[in-house]
Amino acid sequence: MCSWSHWRAELLSLPGGCGDPGNHPHEDYGLLCERSESAFATTIDKALDRAWNRGGLVDFAAQHTWDNAANSVLGVFSQAVN
Image (cartoon, rainbow, N blue to C red):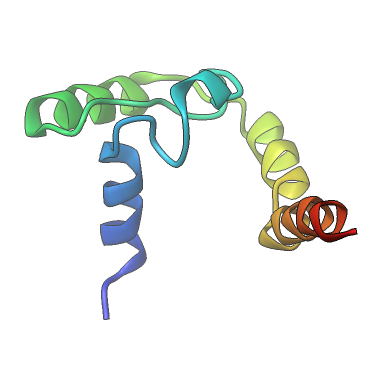
């Protein structure tokens, strides 16, 4: 089984992160990078040097839980089949 840090690294290194770069809410909530070692290293350095708004990150995460995402997807599918 892979560790959380492994999966986090995979998500951070995907083109578009965990979705389309056009849907990325804002750099206040995370950074995207191309899938290469050098881009990943640069982005990690940038993230470590940043003064993050921890309260804002917590608020954003509380609004974007797996339950909320699942309910949103369920709503889309429910509309599609009705």
